[in-house]
Image (cartoon, rainbow, N blue to C red; front, side):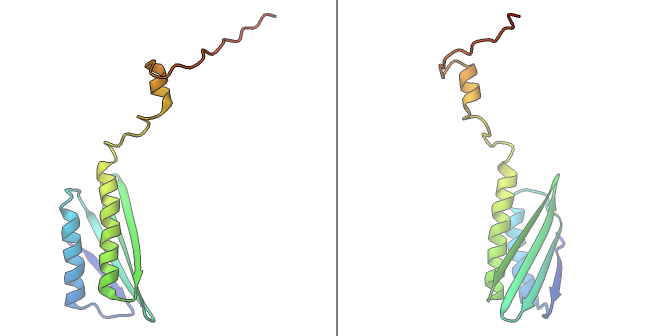
Length: 122
């Protein structure tokens, strides 16, 4: 996988590039196609900002991290991306609405008072 890395206001060293590539190699283990990942590293005074945008099938994932230490910011960014990719991966199997009362009422598990029908007697 080719990662596009852009550095603003600092020099991109081989160790920074290696750290970013190692974090993204951990993300590849989730078996999600990472399309065109782009990382932007910015240094403002003592604070390092790292932003990453990744295109995945039918969606786009963005994460941002800030820290005084560059490598700590890279790790924080990797954790945030991993959390979002994990949520993306398990989204189809989520039990959304399974615990709502609507289906339980239809199945007769929840017994409520019957709703009286309103008729026009005019």
